[in-house]
Length: 112
Image (cartoon, rainbow, N blue to C red):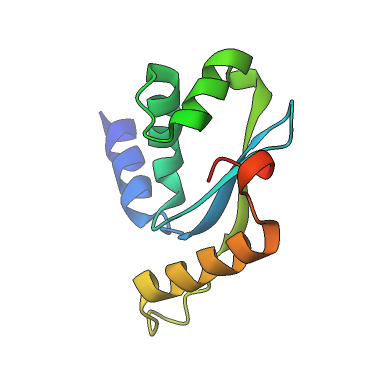
């Protein structure tokens, strides 16, 4: 029981990191880019793909075709938190725009 309490406390104290990530198809190098307020939520993204409920139909179709082994989840950039003095929502939007402009994951290059 003590171990369970320790694990709960560690979870509560764990730093929440926000930022931009990509899901890259290792077979054809197509990418899906998105942002999250908490990188821990990527587990849920993987789960939705495994369950076949991902809203991005092109990504879901290729996940089904190639299998989960053909995809890599990669953090592109972690949002820098200047002691909580930033508007995270706005900062994430700007960070996502930067990566979308840089990688251009459209058409044959991505799932957008």
